[in-house]
Length: 172
Image (cartoon, rainbow, N blue to C red; front, side):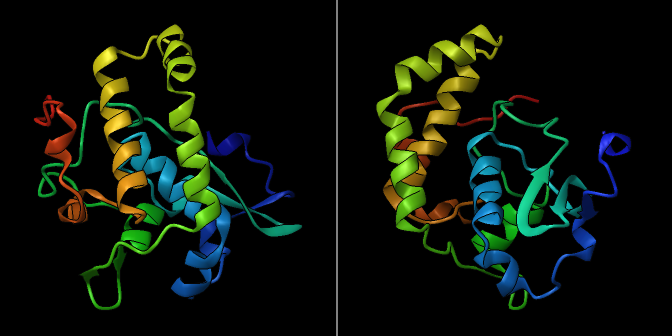
């Protein structure tokens, strides 16, 4: 996919501010973290998002190959979280799980999506997404709405995923 990114329009994320706090403060970065949690895309790394040169807070993501696979982030020892998902849910400097608060405007978008669940389910099924993957996705969406915090597979202690009545054992 990288060959299709126009280098005159985009820089790699490596050129973006190294300051973690500056990254975490941008809405696009926060949206990527939420998207990766909701879709169970645990493999996002710096090579998978690009910065628009004329608007450095505008990010473009590629490589969603692990998205909507049946995972509820219940076995954190299997793969390390990476990228925005990891940085919004923990403090890389202290290696502490934090679960930073989600802004009210982003929480409102999450709540609004929940009200449109039936329509969104139909659209996902039309794309060939399995019922199991869709249900697991809604567990993660509801966990965000309930906790109000950025979550990752490693800080799910902030919310009890089992209460959502879905089998949480990932398939191999």
